[in-house]
Amino acid sequence: MEKVIINIKADSVPQMTPELEKLIGIARADFKNKKNISGPFSTAEEMDTYLDAL
Image 1: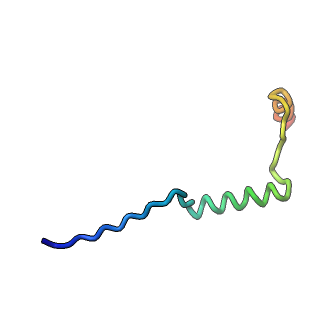
Image 2: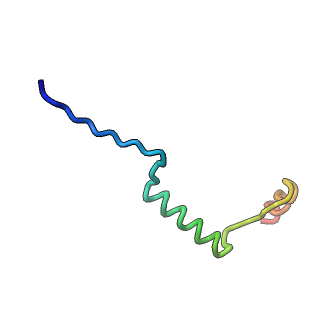
Image 3: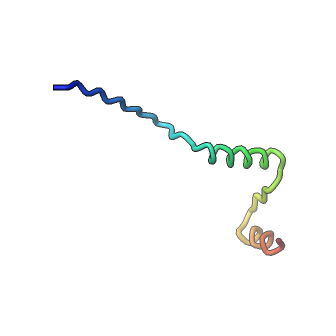
């Protein structure tokens, strides 16, 4: 009988794809530079007013 070796990798933290890492990097840079960020809004009405003005 032939011996079979199986390797199993168990990780509790999923790995991100390179594309997702790039998008998150862009979002973090935007947040740091206060670019493309809206809010925070205290109420839904305040958010609606902001969005209606765009």
